[in-house]
Amino acid sequence: MANFTIADIKALREQLGTGMVDTKKALEEADGDIEKAVEILRLKGAKGNAKRADRSTTEGLVVAREADGQVTLVELACETDFVAKNDRFIALADKVADAAAAASADSAEAALAAPAGDQTVAQLISDEAAIIGEKIELRRVRTLHGDKFEVYLHKTSKDLPPQIGVVVAYTGDDAATARSIAQHISFANPSYLSRDDVPAADVEKEREIVTEISRNEGKPEAALPKIVEGRVNAFFKQVALLEQDYAKDNKLSVAQVAKDAGITVTDFARFKVGA
Image 1 (cartoon, rainbow, N blue to C red):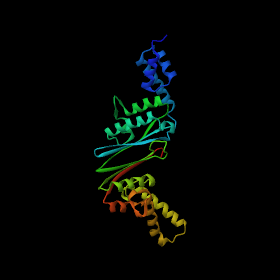
Image 2: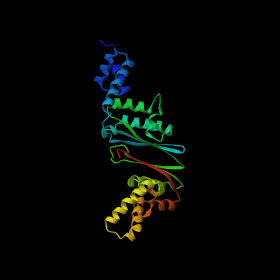
Image 3: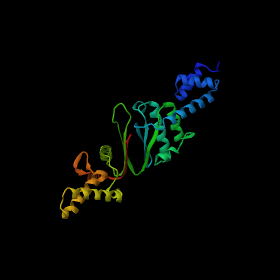
Image 4: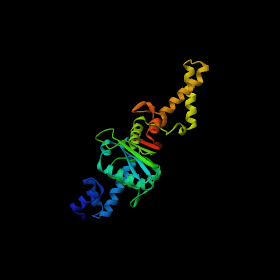
């Protein structure tokens, strides 16, 4: 009979979060050697991770970490909403966010390479995925630098952790308006801060499209420049935050709201799980 006790099984399960049967089998195979049993269970979990590699991760959460002069926003994805609200998954997200913020990571790749205790974030996620039993993916990481910040985390369901996260970096003293703009961003989903940030190639492509549409609609050739310019401006209002109609008062642009409040939005980030 293998040299281990019920207490050993309990302790190993608490350490790794593994099932009773798998834990007992690992201890039997290791002849009661705890360290060897841990290795067996992790190898088994790693094989499970490989089998899950092609699965989609459409659930998860968004978490933020603020430190002096920076905020790091993280999207950690999983397969099911059951896991997304699991305490172990939420704790993992917190560890990943802490490590990403400590490294000032500005991409998922940089965060995965960051240290998390005596391992990397990538290894931490792999180990926890093996225990949780789902594919877990660090999808996006962004670190914003600035003077002041407003962080808005939105729950799309009361039973789940936040699935939309917004960070607004700004200067000025009106935190309430900065938060309101963060809420606007969560709803309006702009891609750029200002029209100047929209890539020239994207603007030119849009100009070509609306010119063709206008011609197909039979608009007079002489009127085309003005019509096209109006439609390009409408495009900017879709994709550039400062150009957008403010969600709480569509008679005002976000730029005007910020100006009236005496604040300047310098940067923003928005993550939505699965989007």
